[in-house]
Image (cartoon, rainbow, N blue to C red; front, side, top):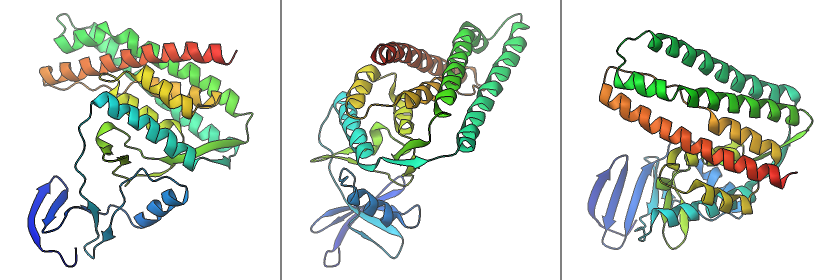
Length: 292
């Protein structure tokens, strides 16, 4: 940008788009220190499907090339995401020793969350049963209470099986996790590029897929996408059990005074939960056949 003259500056949310007499750039505030090390780590592992900055300014802004996204169908972009995710994980996989105490802490944290949600929904159910003329939101909740409890039981069952299995192991598989793995964070240029790497850090292979499914399960064929992904990065049995546990965990649903928005939120939540339940039932059946 040194010898270029700025012709136009646009503000879009938290980024600037700079048009010069030669090129177009995107400027974004760097959200953490040592972000350069993240880019270096990805390149050293042979992963190139990410948008790398051209330079870093004194204002702590990163300068990226502005890439016009090609036309695509969301279904095509979702398939590209599965290929990118499996590639990212294959390139960054490593194994780490762990102690039983570390796994026990994870187990107890998830179990505590499950127990809390059980108690929370039991209390809500008791309160709503006393209502003579339930509101539309309460009626919607009552109709789907069995889905909440069955999801919690499924999560609990998979958690116990996971803990029993992991207790006999000494190592665990880790990868670099994007933590916001959704369609809006893939740029379809000449090759698909991951963007928004501010939260990229070490984590479990299941984390990004859980995020993606919870974001897109109502508009994407998650069975088909998961199959594509698993062909290139299959989960171990213990990973699948923890994946099923965390994916099936329902959110904490809170009612507010706005009946319309509460009903819309509730309806979407239950639709997602039901879609995830059907997905996990199919995957569990396939997984059992494959491993027996």
